[in-house]
Structure formats: structure tokens, C-alpha cells
Length: 164
Image (tube, rainbow, N blue to C red; front, side, top):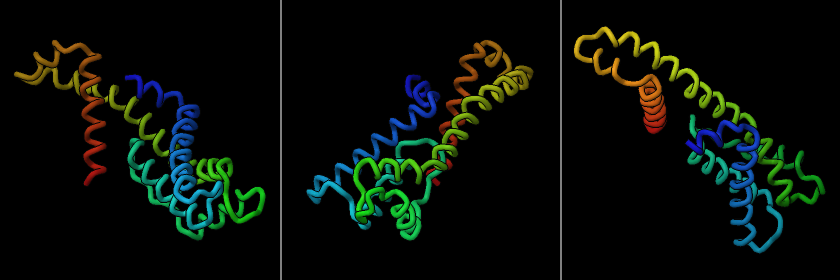
């Protein structure tokens, strides 16, 4: 339940997740190469790693990483000191810009799941109360339990459809 509440906090949660992912990726290259900045090749590999993490950690559809040309164009926009490399601050800004649409899609999926599923649950509960055999069981279930079960079923269905 705590994770759901964290996700509902919106921008703060998003910033925290992006910061976690970008720090992990940036530190990986910094420790591997010993340099304080990322070259274009390191940056592109870093973008691939970030998208891999996003696809693993966040609910919703999987996202394809951008092309090398798109990354190169964004590098030129975000390379503040014009040295052809990107530091930690530039990398974080770069990833935030690159993934802005990703989090909009994830947020829409979460809202749909958390709002639509309980509403549908209540409608199906009323509809199934008259079904012989099942109706009496459904009537005995509290609305909150029934809505939670259906929401859980929707989330599991979404995850299963993504794996196919």
C-alpha cells in the first residue's frame, strides 16, 4: 500500500525515481572509466541502461529507447559547458527531458487502474449479485474487499499482457 501512495505523490515520486536511476547509471560509468564525465558512447549506453531500469521498475507498457541521432541532438542541447561530454547534473537533466513522455503514460495507466477498476468492480458486483450460486457469495463480500480483489486482478492482467 505504501508503494501505491508513493506513486500517487506524482512529481516528487517521479523525481526520486529518475534521480535513483540516473545516479546508479552515472556511478556505473564513473567507477568503470574513472572519468567524471560521460562521452557520447557512454551516454548512449547509459540511456539504454536507464530505459532498461524504467521498463523493469515502472508499471505500464515497455518503452523503446531513442535512436543514436536523437540522443546526439539532445546531448548538444544539454551540454552546458560545450565540452562534448556530459557531467552528472547535465545527465540528470538530459534523462528528465528524455523520459518526460514515459512518465505521462505510466501515470495515465496508474490512474486508469486505480480509478476505473474500483468503479467497474462495483458495477460487476451489482450485476453478479443476481447470479445463482455466485450471487450469495458476492453479496457477503464487503465492497472494499471486492473492489480490491478486482483491482488486483486488473493489475495482474496488465502485467501478464505485457509479458506476452
